[in-house]
Amino acid sequence: TQQVILNGPHALVVTGGKVRCIVIADCWANRLMLVTREGMEVGTIGCGLEEHHDGRIQSAAFNGPHGVCKDKAGNIFVADAYNQCVRRVTALSLNEDAESVQELVQGEVLTVAGSGSKGFSDGPARFATFCYPHDVEMHYLNEGAAALLTADFDNNCLRRVFLVEGVGEHVSCWAGSNIGTAGLKDGRVQDALFNHPGGLATSLPPTHLPLSLASTTSSTRIATSNNADVFVADTYNHCVRMISHHNGHWLVKTIAGNGEKGFRDAVGEGARFNCPTGIVLGPFGDVFVADFSNHAIRMLRKESSGSWRVSTLVGKVAKGVDGAPDFGVCGYVDGTLDQGRLNRPHGVTYDADFDTIYVADCMNNRVRTIKGNYLSTLI
Image (tube, rainbow, N blue to C red; front, top):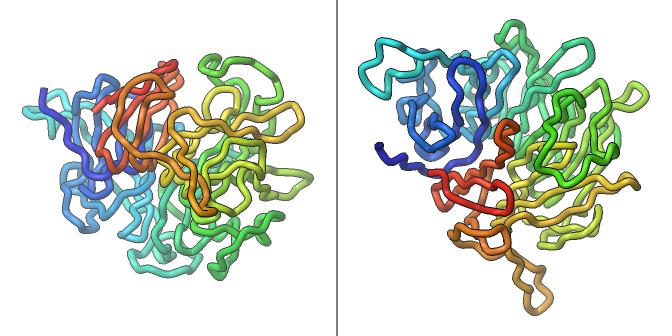
């Protein structure tokens, strides 16, 4: 089997449908890698050139893909950061006549939002502008409605891309300043402030939550809102935010961290992160965060009081000196979770079918797995 070589993996998502695989946003190689759960390559999306071309997955071009997500139809959406746009990969299928690995998987790449120019303008999707979009996530609302949320990193806000049959129709600023102001402010989405939001996750209705990995089935951790909550890794605010629907309004609340960098397990604002990036929901509403500059994977769990307790799944804290905050220790070690080490993990996703967390271990150029009490290397 050919060894899969990665160059700065930033994010990943597990697909369903006809082609079941892990899609890896291999950022600095300007492509998406497709691998099985056993780590075998089954194809690539993108030719590897730092360009912007739509078309067949083998000839399309990306420039620094940072974030990926999927929708219910099997489409894959990509935050194509340095192309200042959002792309869609149609649901993948197998080519039964393939003569090489590169031809095994079929699909098309299309641009759904973004003109390709850097800026901050809403409007028709293909004319709207972004400033280094870092992540995307489908946001399912009441009665089956959905929008594609985009973490518009340098614009310090979340944008909504409205889709019609997979085609971008309109882009609007949803949460954060509509003039790109950075800050840390809770409240209604139109009044809230972010500082370079880097990761997005949305909750699922209770009937879709897997029934394992978490140690307890406390009902306090099950999402019950008809409108899915949104969780944001607010990278330069070093905190995690939650956006929920209450009495007709979407409200932003900081649930962990207070804007100061550091490395501390605690409840709510007492916790400390250092540039959290990737974020995903696991079973029973637990939230997993790739704490990038702490070289750690953190977990948020909602308590009966409504507060969120932060703990560390993987990572080692070192004491800061001369008043400096505590920080994480980097490395490359497989083993039990207390012994395992990462090097700037950027993305994280959860595979409910196998109770497994996959980590895009960026500076180790690896994909790591967390299963049970063990950290291992997939590729």
